[in-house]
Length: 172
Image 1 (tube, rainbow, N blue to C red):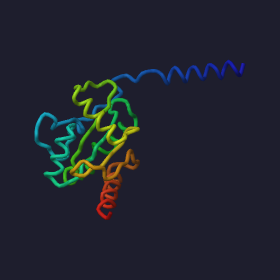
Image 2 (image 1 turned 90 degrees about the vertical axis):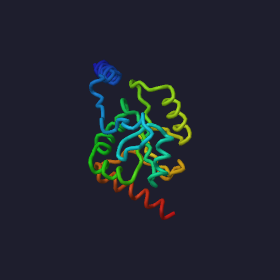
Image 3 (image 1 turned 45 degrees about the vertical axis):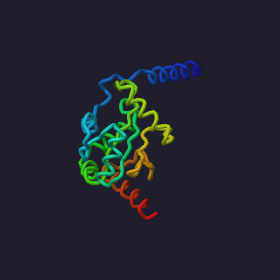
Image 4 (image 1 turned 60 degrees about the horizontal axis):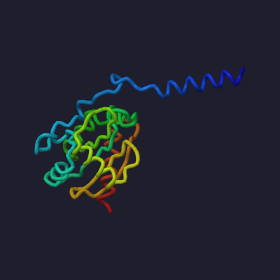
């Protein structure tokens, strides 16, 4: 009897674990949508998807690029980071004055152009990305400064974390 009950519970968990998440449950974040992708100008505090524009903007504004390697429609930690940090005023205000924001997405369901997929794959290989979310801070030449990922405790703590990472680099 115990064996049958244990087998039934394992099968039940396996079936539930393999059930796809309905599309409606994956939140869309208008704050991190690419509002500047079709233009040659970077709008501070917005997310773009073009590496070359990010680097050019970083040079022009004299600030680092925060590169968000994400799986926006399937990665639970990516979705949490977006909801808890990237859409909050504390982060947005900091980013407007201190960062260029680059989102490199690896979605399962969202459509992307072949060129965008190629760019993202190339950069993931270049930076040795092995999991999501991976946040890489790069300088104006595109060289890695530091990397991190999801951090608990919200936007204000995340901003402090980024400031510490950047100040460590300026000391070196």
